[in-house]
Length: 278
Image (cartoon, rainbow, N blue to C red; front, side, top):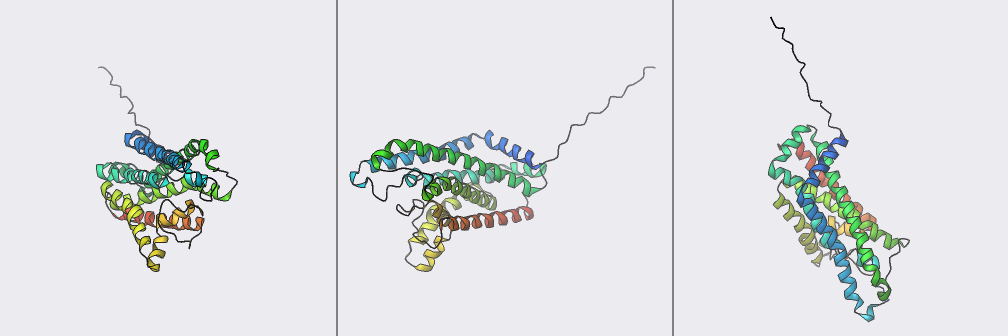
């Protein structure tokens, strides 16, 4: 008789879903999508392109040279008003797109701790937008620099306002992305999420701010974008993001209000995530 030898069964190694592995996995998913790079490229390109167009337009007005309104940092960051739309779309798509395709079920099956999985996804997209917007602002600064001499403008990070505008732009865009991410989680639909975010940023806040009634204007000043844009408001130039002229909030106080909105939306979205089926 021939002896039968039993081969040992090979079991695949199972690694625990640590936070680092979750973040690494979400980064792979984010960068593997072609749409991610297109949206990041669009949001990044808009800022220097808009900055150069504004500087060129003002360079042709000799009367404006040396005036108070020639704030280099404000011109370099003027494209934030358009870039925020691109990054908001990315924030919505990262999470709502998975709900639309059904991939979120796989994500939550692999990682039963739902909150950790979603927070890893949020962290990755916010860091990606922060990095892209930082590059965009620096590119806008460099692109505008040749016209600073003829227009009498300059950027000096030792000046408090210049530092706030240049460093505040990535912070503001990161908060917009996180807000859009939370709204995408709530509505679970890319189209609906984008509609809500764009409507809030462009229509609702500016419409309320334009109504000449003090209570509504005060309310508008404390809505997410209007409050957060105080961080990017120049005393001489004003804001390119909102029509609200309220000065009830300080720059950092306004940004703090925006972060409270972001936190509130995310908390509600995470609570519903635990209670609703994927």
